[in-house]
Image (cartoon, rainbow, N blue to C red; front, side):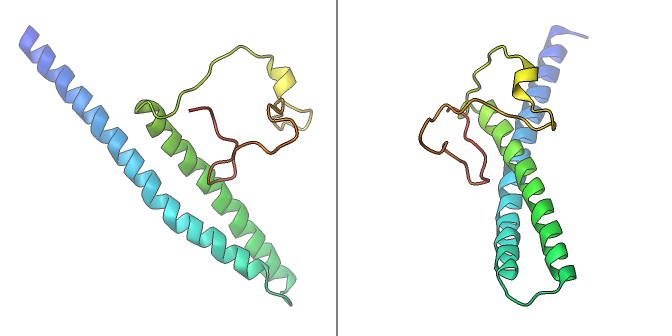
Length: 129
């Protein structure tokens, strides 16, 4: 392989990586809108009185799965934000035993005493930008 061939190959890989990132960002935005509509619709259904047990259970299932999908989409969008420099992660060492409760849930110190932390559209605590 010549130097020119190697440079051409690297340029193609960089371009393919850029197109992949653009696609994932577009996909995240396109998925976010219908998921928000579904979540809001389930909320309206849940507020209706006189529902059967099966209806409430189905609505709770839909709500739980939509929230899970929204978190995945938010993570996908965060990857795009990180790649484009719009979101900066602060790395630090920590003891994972202190971050996970006995039930397996994450717990973090509350850096906003006396007030609620800033949340993104998915209800998750925002990372410093």
